[in-house]
Image (cartoon, rainbow, N blue to C red; front, side, top):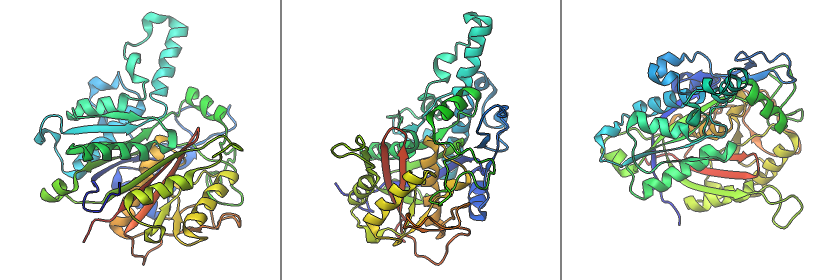
Length: 412
């Protein structure tokens, strides 16, 4: 069923924890400046490893964002999530306490859970014994803990959940939140945050393959570039407040944009029936769900894998859908690295801000796309002077997940 602008849920609040800025205003200003948050790792000694760069959230003081009673029972990923969720609710001007019981929920995405917390407790187990393992290990490591802690802190007792589809998760969570709004929920906190910058997490990232070994932060992650050699891992993401659009307008809320469509697809086995990349299928389904055609899309926020073969597949999918170089394409994640579940949520925040401020943020590092990537890539500086009404956000998760979300500017 198509979603019209009149019935699409509204995004009224955004909270951000990103490697190039903590908080919505600081992050967006950095994005428009083309300021990267990819730097040498500081959270642990990475000198023994072949990859030593990451996107770390700067200036995050746990005690400033999390009550002291929660510090001993939460991982960094949950603390980042709590901070972003509070900023999103404050930005929306929404107090869940003013809503009927069970009218507000939380649906987030996460890929790794509390990796750093888990590593610490495993170290205690093997060095000191089971009696020294924290009881909080029973949930602090779990990928659903962010939804749970946000729900508890803000009294979000309505339908809730967690999505685990890696980089696609932030979009899939938002789509699930949209379904809850359609079912009658007044408000849902959604999006995604990930953080696994610890030795145990780093071992997993390295084993998964795909990381760039380039030591220069400015050259390590180059989406669609002929010299692309892999990606950089980062931490953080974004949370959004999704509301019924009519109720949001009724209370005079600022509306960043409307979640108009979603599509998802799963890659089949390479060489098999229906095999190969199905990102284009997800994008087409999102447009159909929104009730629009390719010509209605004003900008695409790309998945931007930073690997030559994967970039080529995405570029081919975009060329097939829109035509070669027919629509502006950007990848602001070039400034943060790939944030797993937080990556597509942050891209969704960027798309909403682009519509809100009528500017397309740039892709950094890449000076021009490779010849076999026929996309109109926005590089160097922001692109202005466009009429931005509709954005398409794409994401691919490790294991074959593909997701796409269409967001539209609210009616004037």
